[in-house]
Image (cartoon, rainbow, N blue to C red):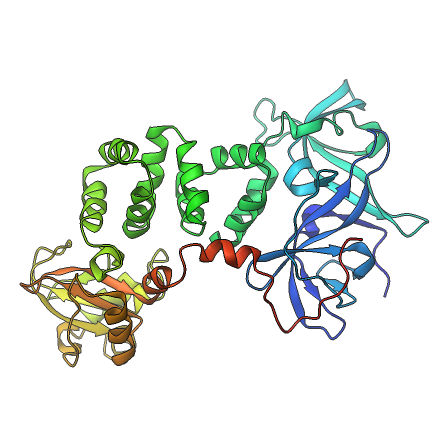
Length: 431
């Protein structure tokens, strides 16, 4: 098979990587190059591939046998060690995209100034891949929503070899991050150089940053939050789920935590304070205070409409809770729970209260991790209610909450860096 003469990096990112048997082994996340002089085309060393388990590895171009519009094929001999960027290497998406450059004589009115939104690479006569062209977008002018675009030869663009990536924005990288799942975006941000990560975090909207923070190791969470101004940090915490926000705030200095809680909306801060009041690693500390709560007059149609909310995790959407007023946690007395699977078999006009599961006991907030795990296993649940001594619903513990607390404290870091992988043959990486 032969590869196309020219490949644009923005279209390459996200493509699946296959072995010779046609089995997918990962996805392309970036391109690694060696920058020489500003006029010399950088040589492409390889790809940054993300293998299953969110670990990033280096895929040498000598191991890439074919690239087309929808996939990348390799020899199958890949080194599964985590990719570590060397000082002589540059990441195209991470460090070249969004850089401010100029193209002398590139437009009808003379010099063009703008930001890089794509880069092309081509295979030369020596079979080496080189960066050959640069796609630049000018700032928007007048009533235009987007500025004019230009494609120029690498040697004709000025500002490409600037060390440290100063004057580098985040537009193109943000577009890529917004197309990823939060866990994948967290991995990419984790691997960015510090100054690049700061620019990206500043440009992300609060809701997206909250989603990404929830998937990051604790050290990254604290570092990013501490670099935000207090007002924005409080806004981001409000967008996080209350249990994740409580865990993060607990890792901050007490005075910082109190400042942020005071800046949060009172209702949001109250939920977080309540979760922080429980003993660590108990049902109360790990529960989510916002499960699907319905009144006794709710119908199956009402329940199905509520669980369609895309912000609900699959675990929380598996169970609805019927309570006496008030319907905000801590609620009135919990009447019972209904499984979504059962409700799907009932007529829409039926009352949810008529389809309750009364066969299981409820968790108390002081229940330990082992007791929560045993409870979920005993009743074959992925979500369970937590009630106080008077039967009021305090929240719900889901299986993902449980796993977050059962795994080692640094499990996210270990998932990013572990070399323990089977099922894919290890071979030779960078020489």
